[in-house]
Amino acid sequence: MSAVSAYGTVNINDGGVFGGTTTINADLVVNDGGTLGPGSSPGLMSIIGDLNSGAGSSMQIEHGGLLAGTEYDQTDVSDDPETTGSAEGIATLNAGANFNIDFFSGYVAEVGYTFDVRIINAYRQRGASGPAQEKPSSSGLS
Image (cartoon, rainbow, N blue to C red; front, side):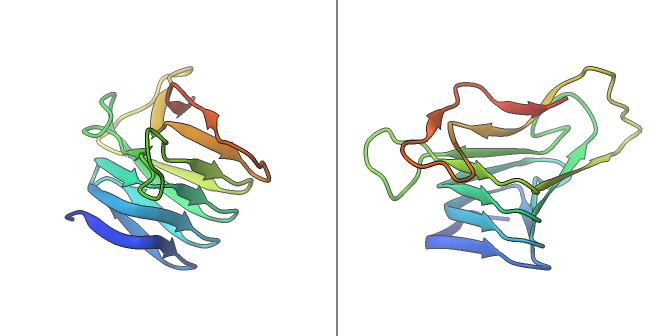
């Protein structure tokens, strides 16, 4: 899939699925019942804008090894196009958002292993106001 450019916001609604190895030049909202599937078995999805994963939304991750973007899916959220200067993209993760992980190629994660499925530069907790908190490292699952 080639880059997706839109002014404003791209919404993934109930029953909708958006995925692939691509760059999205817009804010992305995954609503209740919508699914975000970064990568193309697997791959990297870059969002140049904000990402809002709503309650009841899903992120579908494929995991078959240790290398991000080539052996497991990853999402990079950065540089909001609606701001100027060095402002970063913001990922808002609401309570009730789901992560679904499909292991493939016989891969079995070891106990205690951590892998980063999202790379974010800043984040905002549900209901928070004011500036986003800086997030210097990736958020991961273990």
